[in-house]
Image (cartoon, rainbow, N blue to C red; front, side, top):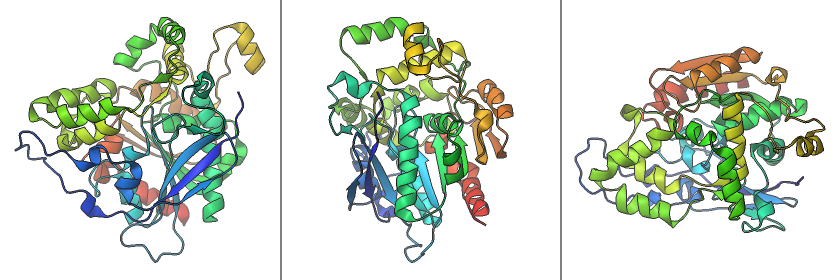
Amino acid sequence: MDVIISVLALLTVTHKSNLYKLDYRDGRFGKLEVDPEVSMNAQGLSMRESLHSQLRTGFILNLQRIPHGKNYAGMMIRPVVLLQHGLLSGSTCFLENLANESLGFILADAGMDVWLGNSRGNFYSRKHKTLKPSDKEFWAWSWDEMAKYDMPANIQYILGLTGAKQLTYIGHSQGTEMAFGRLSEDAELNKMINLFVALAPVAMIGNIIGPIRLLASYSKNIGAFFDKFGIHEFLPNTEMNQCLAKDYCSKKSMEVLCANLLFLLGGFDIKETNVSRIPVYIGHNPAGTSVRNMLHYAQSVNSGLFHKFDYGSEKENMRHYNQTVPPLYDVRKIETPIAFFTGTEDWLSDITDVGMLRPLLKNVIYEKDIPGWNHFDFIWGMNAPQACYDDIIHLIRRIQQ
């Protein structure tokens, strides 16, 4: 179903670093004091004020904005940056660490106009002009639609509001996949992005490991089960998240188990993990997506190819694509400059898959492979500012010159 994306912009003002008071890295604690950020939304994590602006009809996407940092309130011209989160996450993933460790705040403090996107169906983007989340049609999409409709709508909205001619797009995981997909098909969008920063890049995923790979083997049966019982939403953010974060993961005796819940998905790297923040991470994640989106990922795991959603029959594929199999995305057509950041212990952005993707891209201007990093270190790693974010700031400033 074609939709016209409606974008809801939530404009926040500069953050206050004193929101971040809890840091228990020395490990000398029993039951942690419950961090207030466990249940704080993105507006609360960044600031308390907001302005809402709705455009057009259809899905209503929620954008958050940090227009300047603590030292740049008077700057008239700032580089515009859009951060796009990964699968089952939300904009808060760029704000959930300490203020001096969170990419959203660090970019704002470096003088940038920071925007944070939210994919349709997650905790912040659950509105539609005519559909409700209880409707099956509300969930009839995968990341194909995020790439085709949501990403361009967000970028055009931001450029229109700021008056900028271009912006820097920073994607993590699924956020990179959306960009690889859309930029391979949209020559005009390539011109709107001066730099695409790919954190834990995802396109081909045939070599991933972990539970997602196991589930992919049974995806048809799982999909049929969900459809039979009318389940179309996958892992929404609920009160159970808050309960798990506040009542269990705040206990020292549970911190290893809670950390391993994350590590089992994205790879192990305890040295980069601030265990005091795990209740915050789990309080905000997972943030929900559609069952169809998860089936699309399962298809990609099983095929090892970077392709559009397979509707399951030659007839349906012919109806949607005018061919019997889903088309491949041709990333060789991407013109936008790309910066690649990868981790050697990333289970979801596997080095073999990345190695197949990289030679197909003709305009990679920067590459960094970080030893020992897993999938989540790019957003939550304690040393991310030094190992990754400083490089990003340098690249953005260089591209502006």
